[in-house]
Length: 433
Image 1 (cartoon, one colour):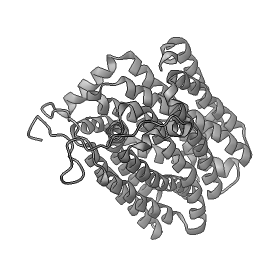
Image 2 (image 1 turned 120 degrees about the vertical axis):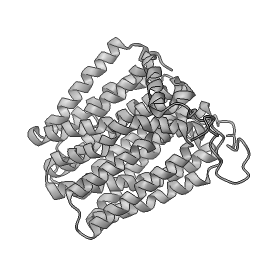
Image 3 (image 1 turned 135 degrees about the horizontal axis):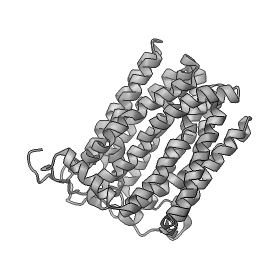
Image 4 (image 1 turned 135 degrees about the vertical axis):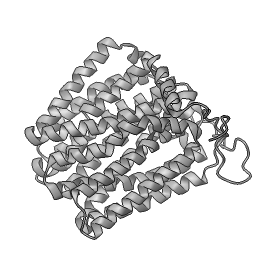
């Protein structure tokens, strides 16, 4: 951009007024109205609907891809390699993704990244339909998908405040979690049935089609103008400026540490579910889908619970509780050997994950300055998506030598020790409202 005074984001339609975002009506005093307050905003309704359809497709692909990899390799370690490939670009590019999210209209950036993801899904479908797909194909496509996600995730996290007023931000973040987890309930179940009946290729095809919903939703939005970060500075200088801001705020650093521990040592159970379905429960693709859906059901319950209680504050207490609950339920899951008990434990695991991730997200966004929102949320996204490949790499390798149950037990033990450290060393977390 040649002009350092970067223009604001352009509205979607010709002739739109300068601040076209419709105001929400007064929040309903009912429990229903409080739980779904952000849906009063037309732009957020578009976002919610488009994302729900797209995320169902994403979970169909994630579930089918994991099982396909295990069928091709019969190796838990290979599940870890694919997870590492999907997240590795986040380690290299996510922070710059945050810089870009502060410099350009986020809606435009999201359209580009979502379109790229759609094309990648169709490529994987084509390789699978023609029966030439190999594990290395999946790794390369996971690497490309992770690259697109490195720019998509920070923009998507920071984009929420362009869709709702600040007073509804926590509710919108919680509802984002609920739609993702509703997709986690539906997507894996549909994927398991589709995989068993028609094969993996149709799961990948349906994912590609699902991206059309979120792209159309983005194009239909009428957005308010947003001042963009001046382009006079280089991206590297802006990145350093954002990191200096973060380092100067100890509370923000502490809030980011909680999800970092969860991603590295607890969320590893997700990449091991295909191996668990086959080796521990002696099941198939349908069992894998049911396990994925069970954790999604728990996450959905947790997200809706958080959304309904957002007006009460006490978010720090919920976050602290989650740091103990999440790994404790993983220990319970590690002891199960039947499908009903495994699914019940995963419901609790999903709920605990929402306590950590949603509350950490909401608290970080409530503490950060708007000027640095994209860059700080890129650090949050780096933790969420960049931590996943590191967790996948160590967990997949450990499961290969020690087995999935012992690997989950070790990870949960580390996370519980960290939760105790947060309790004693960071009591300010519990006081955050």
